[in-house]
Image (tube, rainbow, N blue to C red; front, side, top):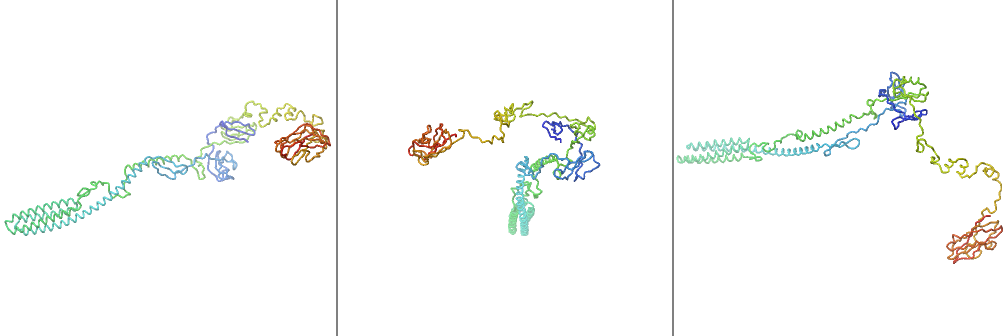
Length: 605
């Protein structure tokens, strides 16, 4: 089986049971026109068996396992690949798409609430201008509404004033009628004083004019005031003239004088009536310092009208700020839409649409062939390859047609020597030191020149370890000689004795076992250790070994109180024969003696 993997140097590493490992330099295939994706089939059995062109490909949705679902099957010119042997068609996973869940305004910024990841903030300076303009417009609208209310109140007051003026004009007309009647009466009573009567009639006429002028004041308080004032002046003048006429007629006739006096009284009444008409017609004297018909321009409220809130316009600055915000936001949205236009689309299964898959060239293994003729009979395209079993090499199409030998290239692999030994390269000479997990003994065995050196390395001496019966051979485990009864050599067997001489408070003498012990065999002692259970309060313990009641020279030992528990030792060579009695004798004790005396003798029998 041939394995192909990527190499660090840009080639392809190939390993095979029959082909030496090495580096295969990639040969670029022709432009990807060899596969035509025709669509999807639900199952493998639906793949068409006729009318196919080499390179036709169908995606089969069903499969026995998850791994064999949604595989691409390519017609090789004669048949489809076996079921489950299709190829996975999947491009690299794209970046996860994100959407905009909402947009809010924060200060001079538009904040985009993204469906994935952190929010995106974009600075829009016009937002602050728009907000300020909107605030100013709202303030202006509020002020206009207040002015509108005040104007409505002023209009109501003006209407009331007009009504009062009308009433005053009516009263003035009534007074003028009364004045006219008075004038007529004066004319009748002063018939002889025609000048006076004429003057009185003129006064009546003037009073009537005053009434008409008062009626005209209904359309404007200022005109009514002026007319009433003129009527009053005329009436006053007529009264003066009447008085003069009456005085002039005084000499003519007493009756005329009396009548003239009555006419004067009537004229005065008319003058008073005219004054009353003037006062009644005055009504509203002024509005905002203006008299007569007062306009909105005079009051500085040209922009006040009864326009509904829905129809009220906004300022040019506010509209400009809104337009800037709209343009900026539109540019941002256009940028987002432009970015979204470049993304890949996915189907309902989360996979790339077939229409967006790029064209691909797929190289095929055309199989094993036994000869050159069989190789030239293969149907393939540039990049396809096969194995020649007759040469044990791999051949690849580097051009077309496949029937031409010049279109094929034989791949030759160099030998693959060991790249390094223990980190060393080149001509490496190994030694026992290269075996890093070996012991010194093991390495010495490896370096041994002969068997003797190897035995020396393992500590076997000079023996050849051959099985035999001589001194230079080794005995077998079942050698009969190993079963012979052998008497040990005298003086070679250990013979040690522990003798508890005293157990209570120590005292001089032979202690608890005065008879001692009888030795059953000859023995030579070389050392004796005396030790106590407890020490004396002070002073020394002196003790010795006796043989058959006689002190053995060299065994007497003096032990200070501080060392009595640990013990004191004497050494020498003391021979005893079989049957000798051995005793322990205390010859001196310290102050307030402690307890116990034990002797431990080491010897060979």
